Length: 478
Image (cartoon, one colour):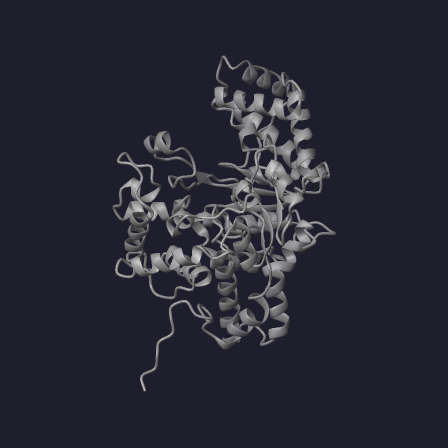
């Protein structure tokens, strides 16, 4: 009798040793998910959003997919839907992505997309141009299921905590609404104050400062007014359950400055008549980064520093589509000295918060792992963390390199694990993908004799990385 081949996505996907299978199925698979950094719109959670078709939920805001579709020659109306010839239909977009999938061998989208099809739609057939219509119709039928909604997908994915990404001027009205109508997943805001230091465009910056003033209920004329307003909003976020901040910056800012300089720089910026010099802008950015982290420490928050992303390279497309639409790349700033200066200054004032460090450039893994070792401090286990492989790096090679650097130069057992960094409610399979790769790596080293054959001990480490460490580190109590 001819043996039937397993589907590409099966129970043992990526688990190519007995030890890997024991670790994953025994210790990782059923652990809840903590997604401590994502970009899900809170309004969609509050209103328990549903979708019209698979293209809506799959392609609506996914710039990972848009980039690949553009690379395969599809016009913009089939990608983001913002082309000159009008938006394509859901079927046209889905078919274009299905044809794109035929070219994505070894790309993480190939694995992620098939995992999403299997986990949420029961589809194990390979997606391509020939299978597209069958899969499209089957997925659209599944979308009609009662559970297939924003909250339903979180429940199905066993998500315990989600931290969204929120501007200090946000009202957090949807977080407050969710708190009045809670469900099985904690939904918490995360403080993202990037616009506070973007003083290159004074018109846009001053408009944001005016919004900050309105949100804080005070006038902002001076640097002290600005600090007071930011503290008020920080306190408001804390009252809404926020315990984590996030700074999306190009590099680490640590230029020297004086209080007198800051007062003058802020006054000049607020006047909005004369652009700041690069030196003035850098001093202001350095001051806010320091004061922001100090504020986080005082509130017992965890800070996330995401850097080394060069954004919006295609200026003509940026003018049409705005940010976060697939035109960013890995940056190459050297930050070692500035990061050490920033942390040392905070430590000297006993104001260094728990901090997770992410570089979009993989060359920084070992550097960050050694810098963080200089600032670990009791009573925390892993107070300073090497962040999960992020954005362009959350694929097999990127995850493995991050695990290797952390293992060699830090403590893998203290790692707070994976995140989605996504706008999609289907992206929780990235946690599964990471867990399978972690178990694959540990399992292979057990089989080769590089690790002790102690499944119970290593299984505890896998469980901790999957859920327990993050739950304790952030204080979620999930």
